[in-house]
Every structure is written in C-alpha cells, then in structure tokens.
Length: 304
Ligand SMILES: NC(=O)c1ccc[n+]([C@@H]2O[C@H](COP(=O)([O-])OP(=O)(O)OC[C@H]3O[C@@H](n4cnc5c(N)ncnc54)[C@H](OP(=O)(O)O)[C@@H]3O)[C@@H](O)[C@H]2O)c1
Image 1 (cartoon, rainbow, N blue to C red):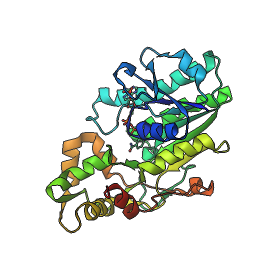
Image 2: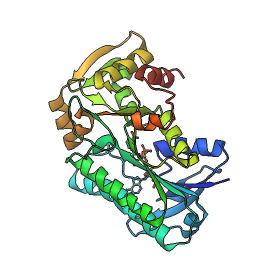
Image 3: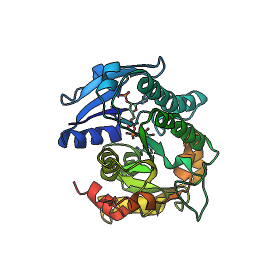
Image 4: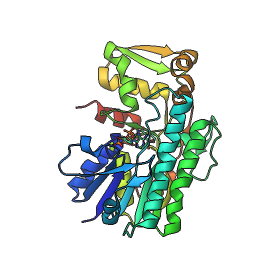
C-alpha cells in the first residue's frame, strides 16, 4: 500500500486525514517539528526543521504522496510583525524545503497536495471567486500567493500538484467553530460585525475527503477551491449553529466591527472580510459533498 507523508499532520485537518488514510490501509509518516512529543502508534513520526532546512531523508525516500499542511496557525495569535513573518515563512520556507528534498534525494513521490486558503481572494460583494481570479493585495492574500508559488516549483521536478484553496473548516475538534461556539455556552449566539459578510466554509469530513480524493484520483491536478457549494453569511452560520446546538434557548448578540478590530487588530480582517468562492470546478470532477449546506453541516456537528 502507498505511503503518504503529511507535513503538519498533527493539526486539525492532518489528524482527521491520518485517521482516514490508516482506515484505508495507507502508511502515514507525519513530518513534525517535535516528533518525540507524538503518540499515535499506527503512525511513523519524522523530524524536520524549516528554519535550518533539515528534513528526514528516509521519510522522503519512502513516500508516494506528500500532503503539505504545515504552517503557523493564522487565527491563534495577534498579528504582530514577527507573527506575520512566522505565518509566511512557515509556509513558503517549508515548501522550499520539500522542493529541495525532492530535488536532492532519490524518491518516488508522484504527487504533492498542498493546502492554501480562500484568503487568496479579495472582497467584492457580488463576485463569486473562481480559481482563475487574481489574488487580492492584503497580507493574507500576498502570503497565500507566495505559498502557492513556492510549492508550485515541484511541478518542475515532474511531480503532479494539487492545491486546495480552503475555506473555514468546521470541526468539533478545534479551529473556528470552537471560537464561534464559546459565547453560546452562556446562551449567546454572537454575530460578528454586521453579520452580512459571506464566509467560505467547509465541513471537516469534506475537506478530508478532498485530500483523500486527490491521492486516489490520478487525474486530479491543479488549483481547486475547497469550500462548500452553498456560501452563507456570518449571521446565517452563527444562527444555524445556535439552532442546532441550543434549539430555541439562545439570545442573539452582535460584536461591532470596531470592537473586533480593537480586540483582534489586523487579524479582524479574517472574520470581517466577505468572500464568496465557487465550488464548481471540484464538483465538475465528480466530487460530491457530504455536507453541502450549513444546516446539514451543523446538524452533523452538533448531533453527537
Ligand atoms: N483549519 C482551517 O479552517 C483552514 C482554513 C484554510 C486553510 N487552512 C490551511 O490548512 C493547513 C492545515 O490546517 P489545520 O487547521 O490543520 O492547521 P493546524 O491545526 O494549525 O496545524 C498545522 C500544523 O502545522 C505545524 N506548524 C505549526 N506552526 C509551524 C511552524 N512555525 N513551522 C512549521 N510547522 C508548523 C504544526 O505541526 P507540528 O507542531 O507537529 O510541527 C501544526 O500541527 C494550514 O496550512 C492552514 O493554513 C486551514
């Protein structure tokens, strides 16, 4: 059975993808900064260090596929200049390390499948972004563009490449949903800003199936938006979550944009920016979403 390296495989998406790959009989090697801290006995952990550009040569030699998920978390800490540099470097320099390893070590890697983000796109109220649209010019967009460019170099080594421009991943195990849910524990459905901004979102199960699909489907290549086909506003998302989790027992509140800007600084753009991205291209390949609407997604997430 094939071997899949997952960089950053210890994170939200990587953990769920690892589970699916193991179920399907794949061998999984996770490249981590701290492999000694990890404990899944069914997985091999290997070390890499993006700063010193060192990587486990044997892991590269064993791999048939590389899934590149590593990167400093965009929503975790305030965007100081140093943090922004870390967010960018952890993506571009890790991509460079993968490229150099594939160039210098004999290997049988067929395909690299990399994360990217819908942060690539700008904000136009009525426009639905497709994969051929140009990037915006804000910090996230320029970082995302640099990330995609850095990993694209592997195509020069005769490797296939798939890039998933991912929307906000909804999971009970972490990420944005956990943050959206916090005030609901006290009965408040908290809408951010005006609530009118569109949120490109995707259920964890579907993003994991997309990565799996990119591994099993040889013909899948290029850039795809990884978002559910039915975009919703922040208000619709929060209220859907509140109804599924609390029935009618909640009160709706708003956090005004200025308060979010004060609390989060520049990072507030992440929750206030309105982006609609199209799922048409991936759907044309035959991919069928398990959770195409927000109500189906929230129902599944809050039914356990
Ligand atoms: N979750 C979302 O909503 C979402 C949306 C759009 C795009 N994405 C992208 O999809 C990818 C995976 O997302 P995720 O939610 O699974 O991420 P995550 O939970 O934050 O995990 C990312 C992993 O990257 C590694 N990492 C963190 N900081 C690093 C650094 N400075 N240098 C090198 N590696 C570092 C960590 O692994 P080790 O500690 O083991 O090294 C971590 O487990 C990310 O690149 C993310 O930007 C995610």
